[in-house]
Image 1 (cartoon, helix red, strand yellow):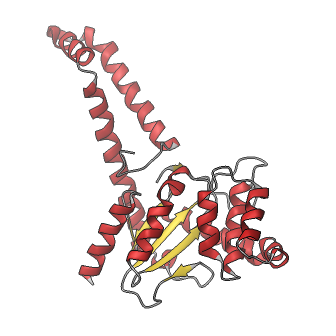
Image 2 (cartoon, rainbow, N blue to C red; image 1 turned 120 degrees about the horizontal axis):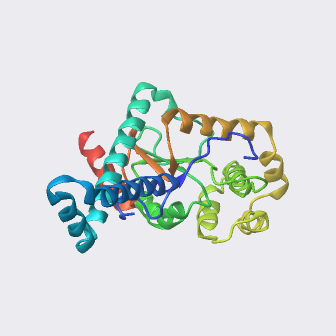
Image 3 (cartoon, one colour; image 1 turned 180 degrees about the vertical axis):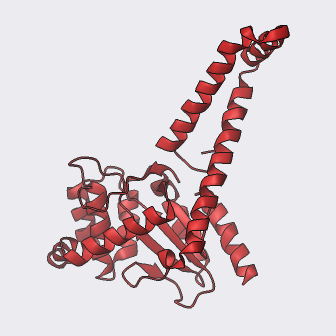
Length: 265
């Protein structure tokens, strides 16, 4: 997970293993960790027996230790966060139950289902999109479900919301994956670029515009926001394999979890 969520359901609204970008939560942990380190360094000279001075001198001479401390803290926080999410998913399976409105590909009766919560402007989502699509091609027996979860809009900027609605409108016309690929490949998304992508991929714009502004679309996106909030999700992308959250976003890790789920049967 890379980008912090703001659970606003309205339209106005890594180490590589863990992520490919810094989230606000990660920056918060780093700041807290650095504050703790600063406190140790400032207090060290006042500790008795000269021990504090030796600690301070050691940390100054070996600053990589501070990186190790912060990495350990972040790993612990990440593990705790995933455990909390998985507990919420286990307590309320309906949050990840099949929804006919969501784009989904692969057998409906597949033994393994992968769900992705994502935002088209999320850097981490874009970074893994191509490899994730390769993962889909490598596992035709797996069900892949897309949860369009626009969380990066701020103020009057509703590009993420518009992109999600546009992609879902394309899905209604059987054009979802082509539009998904193009939106993920577009570095600078805005409404003009989104409309161009829809048109370039054969989407009927009149039908799409009607779908984008329809109350049913608002309800669908709102329900995704509500599910993410109930699960305690904090960023995108977040992957679930048979109802269990992946601790990282690397498609290789997701692929390993898929293989493990297949063996578990």
